[in-house]
Amino acid sequence: MTVKEHDNTLPAGLPVFEPGWVWLAGAGPGDPGLLTLHALNGLRQADVVVYDALVDQSILDWVKPGASADYAGKRGGKPSPKQRDITLKLIEHARAGKRVLRLKGGDPFVFGRGGEEALGLVDAGVPFRIIPGITAGIGGLAYAGIPATHRDCNQAVTFLTGHDQTGLTPDAVNWDGIARGSPVIVMYMAMKHLETIAGKLIAGGRSVDEPVGIVCNASLKTQRVLETTLGKCSAEAEAAGIEPPAIVCVGEVVRLRQGLDWLGALSGRVLDSDPLGLRTDRLSADAG
Image (cartoon, rainbow, N blue to C red):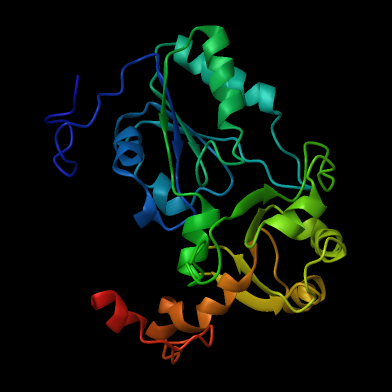
């Protein structure tokens, strides 16, 4: 079945949200304009929306009248619902015949524990749909004018989390291998252990002068961006009052912000057309 007439603000052909189903959806990095049509379609049909801490209130304003919104946010160092209890809540609502939208920040399958929740639904026999979202490690950096890849800088990028399930710096990460092998490193939830992580990367061979970009409240009106270096990132982030939620990017692509800070340009920043210092006749060569 597909949506036809239920909402004339959405295109026809989107799926109907059946009772007893759970849709696991990503809300993107924050800006409500980055929500997908499938996620918006889910918001317009859901009976219950179970949402995370990083879902912006303006997105919740799209919940249909009469639907309930249940907070299930997890924030480091603060009282949070247990993951098992969240999954059981989804199952309970679905078995009651409700249309349940599980709305998670970013993408549910990128450090979002969406896979754990989906497997819980499988075990309970609850049907579900996965709706990907724009992950903050890509969309958040783009709003800061930092591309995850650029052909003059990198042909690979590593995404990692700055803490494991214990809340500590992940021991399972091969820091030496990543330091040697990944030209660009994008880190989620790394602020608490930034000094330790930077030390591990430097010990693995990265330069203390390597560019680092820290994007706080990515894509929101309150977004802040700190351009620093690997050796100074922890101290300068603390001095600047940069706090989670934040994305940390390590690598030469951070220099490109000098030319790609499109939000800064709207406020009058003068952009550099050659931020890497590689002035060439590439445009002419490519055109030929």
